[in-house]
Image (cartoon, helix red, strand yellow):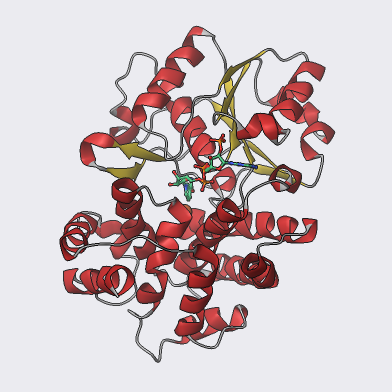
Length: 367
Ligand code: NAP
Ligand code: FE
């Protein structure tokens, strides 16, 4: 067997009520917290109150920054980091979907380096970060167990990962926060988790552990397929989606993502298509880039009880409600832009040139 490395440092708690049941663990994170949330969901789904109750019970003072929008931009994390520095907080708690969780990591870097320009997010790999805890309220990004933080860069008209590897020190996975999550967000985020599983499994960076983790994630995901199609989710399904998403996060933490994520960023930036749906739209055509005889694609489909790449395409269409229209010019522009990210394309196990990327966009967006 080939040599490999596996790393996942986040202490991870799972289960309904896990924040309050493990409140003492906040005492190990620091002495003053800043909660990082979106505008409203953390208040409505009870996650924010659980965290503040836990902090109050431990006599840990806290402040709140609740202005993180979807696909957070650098400007917003700069604003939050200034507040974190002024308030002298020494740890951050991201509560929400991937947007607040990713934002917490970038804020952690900027707040630990108050004199530095925000450029350091993309230039100084060794820049220190404050301690971060994460509480996911969507089952999709896996940010609670990955080192990644994806920022929107308006001057580059795209999204890009910060260069530092910021793992949460602790993550609390309580599926009850998703009880009222809409079918649209549930399905879009579930497809994000699915694409993490797929892209990790088929990557040149995959290793024995990452593959086994993906296979477990796919078996949990398979059980959720009927619920995703019917758009009715029991608490057992919510549990499985949250676990599958975390497993997918652990897998991409080892391998990174691949072509669908690279291509999806431009659909999100230019058309406002939610992240998971953007990846899902290009996934069938990405799978069609593999030669028919590729064994791993067959194994992956088998784990999901699917018989062909067309089955996967039909499933994605069913759960995603895609309705956007695109022009040939847009497809050409996205192709040019995608070719600027050779690292993700290089995780594809066969040669992939510009014409291949154009074809993926063309099949996905124009037919
Ligand atoms: P999101 O942008 O965090 O949230 C989408 C929407 O869902 C927001 O309107 C949010 O409301 C709402 N919401 C969140 N939790 C809810 C709940 N429990 N109940 C009701 N509404 C809820 O979406 P996301 O798909 O989870 O995250 C996407 C971001 O993560 C993208 O920027 C993507 O690039 C990034 N990402 C990161 C990684 C990684 O490894 N770090 C991997 C994949 C993707 P509020 O705004 O009010 O909270
Ligand atoms: Fe993703």
